[in-house]
Amino acid sequence: MTWMITGGAGYIGAHIVREMRYAGQDIVVYDDLSTGVRARVPDEVPLVVGSVLDAQCVTDALKDHAVTGIVHLAAKKQVAESVERPLWYWHENVEGLRILLEAAVASGTVTSFLFSSSAAVYGMPDGVDLVTEETPCSPVNPYGETKLAGERLVRAAGQAHGIRTASLRYFNVAGAAVPALADTGASNLVPMVFDRLTRGEAPRIFGDDYPTADGTCVRDFIHVSDLALAHVAAVRWLADQEVPADLVVNIGRGVGVSVRSMIDTIELTTGDTVAPVVTTRRPGDPARVVASADHAAQVLGWKSRYGVADMVSSAWAGWRRHRTPSA
Image 1: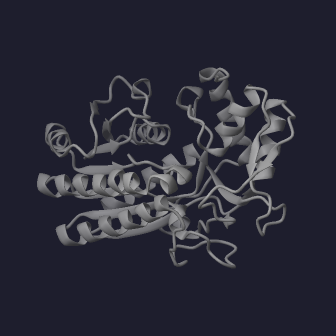
Image 2: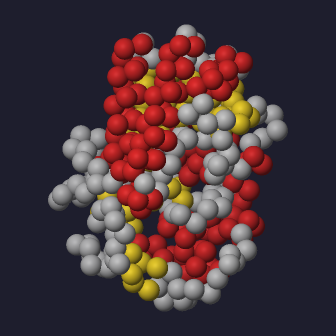
């Protein structure tokens, strides 16, 4: 079986490529390199440079590489940006997915489709300590709305056309398997704090008046290597199912970590002790979203291995390799 990983040159995608290769899967990467890095793709892995919005390019890639399964990660993912540019997010994330699914169905060879979803589909779950897959979905920003729409589109297409499907709802991803694959952007919390500290600036906390223990948002952080292994488990699950089949599962640790606590851990790791400054809330940020990981353990036989200290230390090693203070 040959898997095409869209967004496979990205931070998360490169880790999935790594673990799926270790698991003996044949891989082709499809990436427009808008945020992906060519050097993350091993020389032995074919790379097709193209957008999922380019129907002909997608069609050719599926045919040329005899693709039988797709892991779809390519998407825009910044919450605040989605609030500012909702039409663009719907076009990139939902229309791109529709084009990819249409090409997959037309190929006649694709039998499995694994979709990268997000905890953002839950929105602000009221009074819920741990979010299960049965928790009602009510996204509070366009990014989350596009992911929920994506799940529904994937499920409907799979049922209509005899394709096995699964959607993994990622919680907050951090860390690196090796420094070369570290997150080089500065849009997620951990690298965002690294960026501020290496420039001699105070880390920012976006609001400290949330209804949480220390007033800052609480999230479930998952090591990117654990997330990648969850994809390997999901690929195996898909291979064992009758056609069609569908799965939705949370990928998290089930442990809540506040933003302030995460910054404290980062400062201990880096040795920088610049006190964070509190600014206004970002639009679309829920107060607390922490996973129940029970379903993943029961259905996929998967559970996380790494803690927050591992995430921060591995991410910091990668940051020091790749980044210098930005202007």
